[in-house]
Length: 245
Image (tube, rainbow, N blue to C red; front, side, top):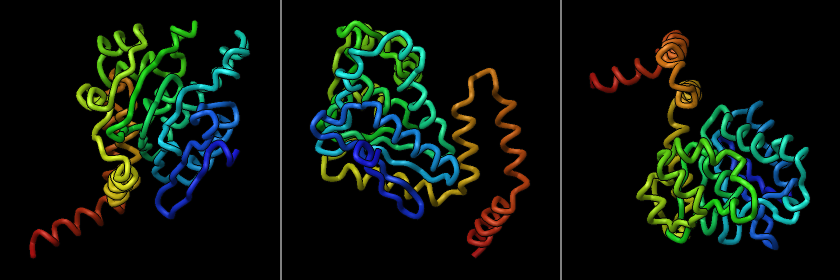
């Protein structure tokens, strides 16, 4: 497991690096198993997660050697999609730092993050129909939520690969950085997140993930809990004291 996904545990965050250089970080079953194990850890001890790839590649896709041999029963197991959904549902934010290609399942892993930033050399695409399958690990709904249904339809139906500047223009990523500055930028985002109240951050993530029909009821429920918290009182008192000086 640790070979497929290299994990650095810091006090207030975790960095997970896809590390299968021989296959350009293609996502195989060992990677999925490692991702599930990491999710179990972060469900028990919530911290923000930065996910990235080693060797100038995010992930070149699912492992085609494994994928070619999978049958209907494997599709029904939802091997990749359930792992990506579990990561997406983690209590604290997930930031994808994308360098090089994020294709197929690699792109879908990136789509499952809360925030995506990329290097200026990043490329994204879902060429699955050219291989006789669909982008079945989240792209069919996540990509439309991120860039709009029309744009997602064009990208998924054509399999067109887009460069970093287009990814920024359509809102697929929030910022571009030189390769050498990408991870520092990801850590800066996490620095901003961890300065906030972790309970409020988790609640914000839950309301952002909720379907439209649950609003505004879910916002009211989450806010009611936070209004009773000692941390809310402490932070607001400190704010008022600073303002009065």
